[in-house]
Length: 561
Image 1 (cartoon, one colour):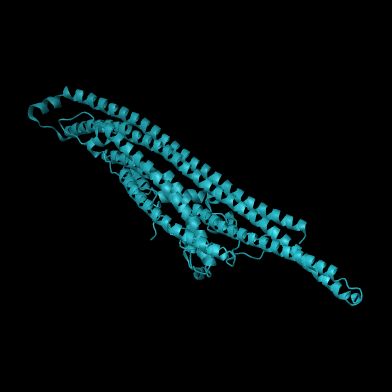
Image 2: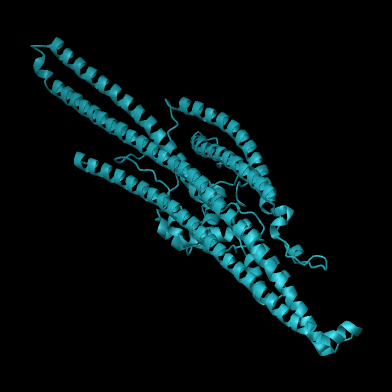
């Protein structure tokens, strides 16, 4: 291969790598844009709901006043009638007139009920919707900060991979150059020795042995020098290649973890409490409407079915399916051999074997410590999540007491007079909720940092363990069931992200489930299974209809089953 062809091939490798990294960065940008659009859509939804209930409260109050005027008009007319005078005399009334009295009584009751309903809309439902809107803005900002950290980590590891790849290419070029110089020296020595043997018969008379010995020594010295240079460059190339392969495994593991786990968890953080809080608000509306006992039961049953069908997991998967191109995991980074280099695995031969063994033991010790620490963080995270679930699923949406009537109380009961909706209790409850949320995000950030470090170190550890002949199957040891990267030594056909998503008909749930199943299989089991192929197309996992009160983020954190 000519020098120009080698340079062209190297440029193609770099260009292909840069294109792949650029595609990933574009995906990261589009992911933020999609999450921001989802938050804006939710805020608009909440604003529309507030405007709707505000206008409906006005209509209910107008209707209540209209009913009261209507009942009072005919009651005043009845009080001057003959039938009313007879009723006051002997408390006896015709059945038709009694029905008329009951109609008026029911009208006055409906007037009070609609006034109560108007008060509930203004002082309960609209306040709840305003609080949900504040939560959406606050949680999106916190989730965006976490997402920026994730993206910076991905950019960092891809830049590190680019650096070690360039270093490997440089040392390999030097190794090839020194090898060619060594071969040239050997050829010159052989040529010199051949000429010396041919001229040996003619030099019996006029021997020039000192000059010939000096020339031979000079050739041998040059050969030894080039041999030493070649050995040095070859050792540097081997070390650089090992670093490249280790960083390649770590990068692929981190990218896979982000697309299979972290992005899903990030969406859960954005959704934290939204579905549960909105469900509580809508259940307050349902309680008020059902307590009114009107002919709208059929429509309210339909609405209740929609509220019961609210599912954070289903919504998240729909968002991901709608934007499958940007949430589909990208192709794994492939090993790019440089200029015909046939070595495609970590070299564990001397003189680097001792170094690799030491590195392997250091990684093993470090991983054991990190896993213990991360498990403790995970337990704290679980306890905090349970506390948040208790806060967000409290059943305080029943307002049926506001519709109870008694002879001694004819005035409209204020929904804000309820102890659960008093300003002091609301402020205290919301302060506790926000404090718990802040602690949760702090611990989750700590857990995320720990799990990222464990994934990278575990990938390097497993590759070293396999290279040194001590390992069988990677076990990342995180608190969830992580995506285990495929063996980098196994040839894998490249599939663009769009094609991989298309093979699953845009069903991100099936794609993620398939990746997890492939990663959890033994190498021998995986040989007969095609990840992303025909077998996974038959996988179907219907979306469950979660109860409306259930808290989202059911997958944070994942625990090993």
